[in-house]
Amino acid sequence: MKRSIVILVGVAIGIVGATSIELPICTAPGDQLYPDVCWDGEAFWVVWQDDSLGTIRGVRVSEEGQLLTDEVELLESGSALGPVHTPGLAAGLGRLAVEARVLVGYNEYAPELELWAVIHREFTVDGEPFTPGSVWIPGSADLARDLGQGASTPQVIFGRKHFFSLYKASYFNGTDGHAWSVFIGFDDYGVTLQDVWSSGGSFEFQPSIGCWDGEQFLIITSWRDSAVFLEDSLAIQGIGWNFQLGREIYKPIGGSAKYQVLISDGRHFFMASEIWQMGVGAIKYKIGFDILDSTGMPIKDSATFIDFNPGIKCWYPDAVFNGEHFQCVWENRSEEAIDLYSIKVDTLGEIVDSGYLVYGSDTAWHPAAARGAHECLIVWSDNRDGDFNVYGTFQDAVGIEEQNPLLTVPPTIIAQPSVFTTSTTLYLPDLNMDKDLTLKIYDNTGSLVKRLVLPRGEKSVVWDGCDATGARCPRGVYFIRMHSAESTANERVVLIK
Image 1 (cartoon, rainbow, N blue to C red):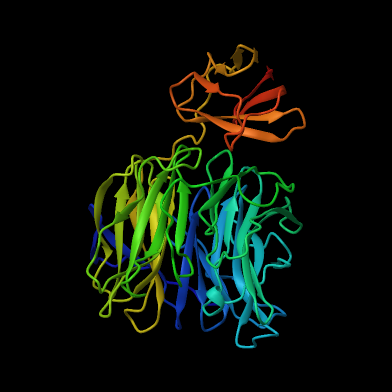
Image 2 (image 1 turned 60 degrees about the vertical axis):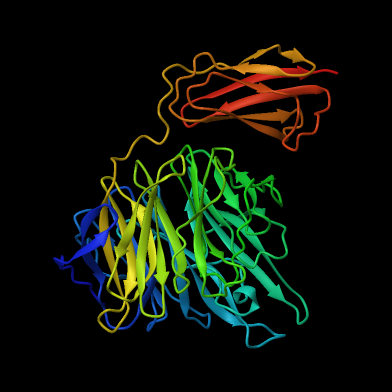
């Protein structure tokens, strides 16, 4: 078994707002590509694609930079053709879930097009298998993106109690090609799958992105910037989307394997995207970012960050919330070098710091970031020594806060009036939460009609009797529900005409 040797190299690198030390995480022979990282509650896990072995390997790393395990082989191709590529991982409930793409065959109508499926396996935080083997997700095969490039990266996300997989599936029948997004959940044993949601789209040649905000998932598709909120529930939650983002549509063309990223601080969402600049050519990509509120709507106009010179291509973004700001990092590619650039953005969408995170190595690829208890770890793949090895750097993080600040008094919803014709005001007089709160309105069949957001510090919100599309709801009984990790409150109202 290969083992990584940790030596803290005393080389300062020019990073955003500080000086940091590089940490070699894997310096094994051969190329180690597409690293990803997550926090398991006590330490970081870093995984990567071992290109020579065709497997996914990983190691556990402390916030002091020590390797806590030997290198572990996490995923291999098994009976499939292989190799295994582009891993993703998440942690929760003392477990680690790892996913990747595995080559399973070739399209019967176009043999040059590879078919890549998603495999999933769970482990203890010490790297010991939790499930007996990898789970192959049926129907997850993805042709090359845009029917001509590498398959998309799957995303594994932990919600409140379960792991979920978000991935793109596609097919080509010789004359017509289609692609769509799928969200599935895993049971407590990490083996049984449950279809939860599908986009129902046909032209999502770039994969969807998603994250958990402490109460629900937000999934954003590449098809018309459509979006949906989903619960942590192993039940079918529909097909299609609930709303579209109110922003200018970014149009990535032939983007990287991870062309977008979406994260949450529990109150806001931060989304960064590769943007192809029309009329300039494929070499010209920018990075655009948005701050979204708790309803998924942008709080300001879309922003495109820094117009580098025409020879710079911004590529492969990732992001982390450090407890105070969102930090986004990506590749700045030119003909001479590939360096990592980073910005820090506050929750109003203003850039508070920027600069090169890794500069001068010339080949820094595939950045990924995660927040721990006191540090954020940013990892990347770098071939300064002839092979692509995995390196990391720590950034200071504000101490982990409670994701759901406690309600000092169980809340009560009061509707005034409770029987209304045009609108009713929903009061929560006992509310004391340091975050936005969502009220959900259901009809008497149990169908979700609308979400209302109660901003942090406010105690009332008005419902105008309309659904999420703005259409007037029919008369009848409706139920108002507030749910958080700490408490639940309900109210009944009657709409009359």
